[in-house]
Amino acid sequence: MNHKLAIDLPGLALKNPVMPASGCFGFGREYSQYYDLSRLGAVIMKAATGTKRLGNPTPRVAETASGMLNAIGLQNPGVDEIIRTEVPFLASYDTNIIANVAGSTIEEYVYVAKQFNNSTDVDALELNISCPNVKEGGIQFGTDAEMAARITDKVKQVSQKPVFVKLSPNVTDIVTMAKAVEAAGADGLSMINTLTGMQIHLPSRKPLLANQTGGLSGPAIKPIAIRMIYEVKQHVSIPIIGMGGIQTAEDVLEFLLAGASAVAVGTANFQNPLVCVEIIDQLPKVLKSYGFKSVNEAIGKGILYDKSNLSCP
Amino acid sequence: MKKVRLMHVSKITPIATDTIELVLNNAEVAQLAIPGQFLHIAVPGHTLRRPISIANVNGDTVTILFKTIGSGTKALASINEGDVLDVLGPNGNGFPIDTIKPSIVLLIGGGIGVPPLYYLAKTLKRKGCQVISVLGFQTKDYVFYEKQFKAIGKTYIVTDDGSYGHKGLVTDVLDDITEPFETYFSCGPLPMLKAVRDYLSVTPGYLSLEERMGCGIGACYACVIPTNDKNGYKKICQQGPVFKSEVVKL
Image 1 (cartoon, helix red, strand yellow):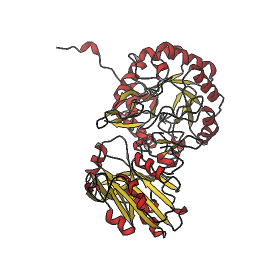
Image 2 (cartoon, rainbow over the protein chains, first blue to last red):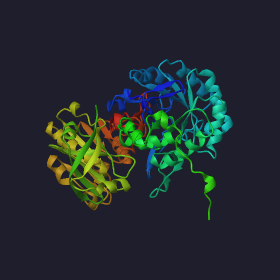
Image 3 (cartoon, chains in turn yellow, red):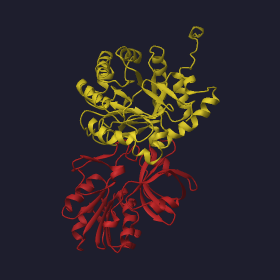
Image 4 (cartoon, rainbow over the protein chains, first blue to last red):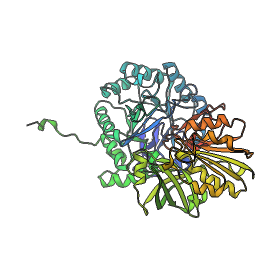
């Protein structure tokens, strides 16, 4: 273990700050055929709902410039089945398990959180109030500060495990959202989820995705994630798991500088199934080459320009 | 452990309108590949890999065919001989070769659904099957592999506009086939697969499906197909792309 990479988050002692992002890694089985999942700091599981969901019609993905749109629609076998069949598989690896909690109603979120809270192998919860691809729940909870706080509070009441609230970037002021969930008891933040987008197929004049719209991910959204994490970091004291277009160890350092304490890698797994371990392998060298002795040392070390000296002619 | 593999481009040939044939070199992939499986190919400058079915295996080489429709396949068509492609695969479950006894079999392909049937035809013939093929294309200019299929067995070519072979749809010539085929295999556009399945409703059949894919290994749930079993869906990349005809809801 490389102690320079280790980082402690509420309830989580991570051997390194890199984890696959929810929804881009299933429940780990497929990627376990490419490498030992014990290499990862944690695995964030695909979102769980109270009962099985079949998701949206296809096509569910479309490529964009430097990214992609997806509208899977929270397809999953339901929380109880996940706890029965998927959590034990991941628990056989020496890594942390973060369960992504979703739903259509507050009651459903609370049920899912309760079930995961009772599963001893789950280490933390990620509260998904930012999925843009379902009709009810998801993003509607994540774009209203009062709603976001309420659901955070309800879930915190049933969970002894740390709760990271995954924020939506589809808001006017992300700082307001971050402050609201922090005040409601969130132990940390995950940011950012995807940005709602749309692509139209010229020959048919129809949206490429059957769901019409989808969530934009990949390198295209990285500057937005960096900006939002930077802004939020100035106003909250809970740790941030940063995500949005990470492809390299240099990207990880950029997220750390912006204020993230750990990172999740999503879309890049589709390009390179080995990307997470390659980033972990590269990270010590990249930290060193930019003058950092550890991950911990780099968190929030991005420096702002002094705007008082800047003026337009 | 599975690997990300590198495949050298040994030959690139335009073989019909908008249709490219690539011969790729990698002994391991060639050895593993079974008919119906696909390669998930990274295209420079593109976020998502492109899933392309295996059309043939010859010694250490694997042949793929694709149509240049969008920016990804156009970029793939502009690579050069000697270049290296970054590939996952062979992925997915192919046709159930081992369960097919020497018998008369019918292959029905439409457009860019034809390529995987070629490797299948070759393999089934080697197993002692009599292979009959029905291949549909838009027009004469889109026809490919006619000679190759004819070398294996009786082959019907059908074009939408009648500019070559029979005019109409692949299902229009099925009545002409008098041989008592026991199994059919089909790959092509969804409306064609539906028509074929309806037409051959009493014959055991296997369909190879395509869909826009994300990861291509079963993790992202992008390419699912509703099914008639209790699970309600299957992942095309991982549990397919070949399915028994009655399992999937088309």
